[in-house]
Length: 372
Image (cartoon, rainbow, N blue to C red; front, top):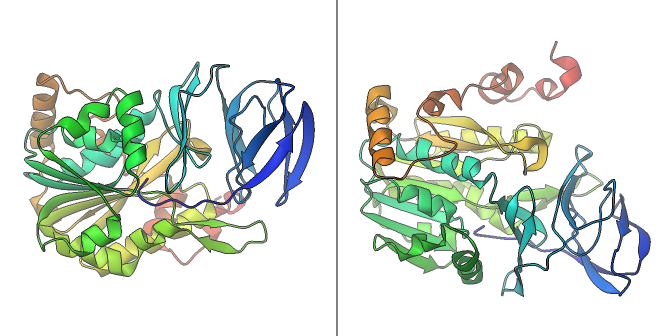
């Protein structure tokens, strides 16, 4: 959520239209006979947030994503209610819409960021494995995550004394304050909010000033239909220079957790291997990919890379269990994370493990027809 890319074209729709763009063929059914402007994002993500259906079995409101690299498409049916929020910030379109099964949904530039139903899985796993990997996480930096959910999870840890939260778009923060139950997180006296560029903030941070850094950023790149790779603004948050600054900003036993895409898309899997090697090259002693199950994200799976400067100082299983029970006792229980996931989240399918850790140069492991 710290950096965003925006490409759109405008199509005038009437009751029913058939449109083809950028190699994607999409059918729209408009239950409102009045003309509307429908914004379509043609590179990887396709979204409809008006009275429309994208390849849906029946008319209705829906938000959907189509990934040309895999031919994968999914959508979430929305209610007929008007969006709870629709606005344009200096950087992007911001919407909050309703779904019967997924609750409120935050959408930025046509891309689903989170739903009330399963936002716990991603945000708890981005946060707690990192926090429990540090013996005493007092000072924390959150880069991105303008929805505030990661921040709210960090604050569950009683060891935390100070959190710097940096996000580029203050309007996203304001919207989420008003529309989501965790929006009070910024009111905690331990939090200092910085509406600023995340990469620049890290670059200027004092050496050794943080115990844990969590980077909840958007995708660093996408792909055209012709196979051309398109770099997005958040690529800088995955660069060698940025990783060097992250490592410098952390203490001697610091921990870095960052969003690392899904292993089910080949280009993402290549990115996982690249980012892991980059983290190791700047001084982290280990970098492990953890998997998260989340139904509202494409392929139902996403992950994070957990990077540690001093793995030998990490708490043991008993200490993690004790600290977790303290959180529960304070009324701050989680709903997805549990201490068992501190290890089991890193147990991957064999072909993924081989690709990431054993033979990153081999692409055959990503082909399901060559796994046997």
